[in-house]
Amino acid sequence: MRKWRTALGILPLVGTVAFVGAITFGASAMAEGRTSAQCGQEFDQCQKVCNEDPDGGAAKRAPCVAKCSGLYAACDAGVAYEKAKPWIEEQAKKTKRFFDELIDKYGTKNEPGPPKKDKSNSI
Image (tube, rainbow, N blue to C red):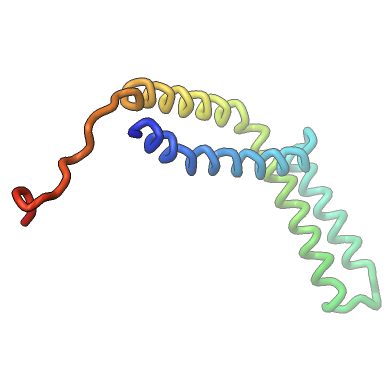
């Protein structure tokens, strides 16, 4: 029973790591080997396209600027992830090793739970 509680306690952490990994993988795919400077140049080009429409006005320009900002953020996050990827992978290995050792040490013992309450030990 204790083994299952330990495993269930770890599941949220594993789920969070997997979710963050999926997000950073998506950002990494957006970077595709680019640098921060290249992301900035693409942002500037996108902004230029947004500003070229003379009939656009603020109502048409705002969504275009938001799209450019989102693309820049995704690209720049991907560049940062690619730089941090070796460190992140090492931390994931260390975390897995830590939890494996923890489960090996404490997860296999079948210790009795706390004593049940009865009239002799209740308040």
